[in-house]
Amino acid sequence: MLPERTETAEEAYLEQWRSSTDTDGLLNAITAAIESRRPQLAARLVGLLGEHIQVEPGSPVDRARRAAKMLMLPTAKTEDFAALQAAWVLARRMRMRRITRRMRGGARRSRRSGKRR
Image (cartoon, rainbow, N blue to C red; front, side):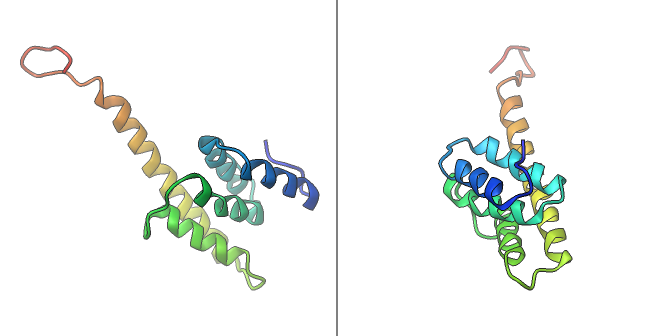
């Protein structure tokens, strides 16, 4: 799923995501880059999120974007990648909760009659 660890392969991969409208695919690509310990690629992919979703100030996704910006600086530290990882885990967890809540919402039953609402 991730490109080779060459500059040209990563540039082509990023260009593919710039022109894509697949938000879920981009989120999965970011997760894969983080899990593969590829901080620069992960940071660059997180930078593309603004084109795909609306990012609320102070949200975990906003914190991930700020950590990604720090990783792109020449003075990036290991702690910056750890901050990106932590923010991304929280963002994914919140997204999964929203999806689960939305999916379960249609299957609720009324307590009195046992019928679906």
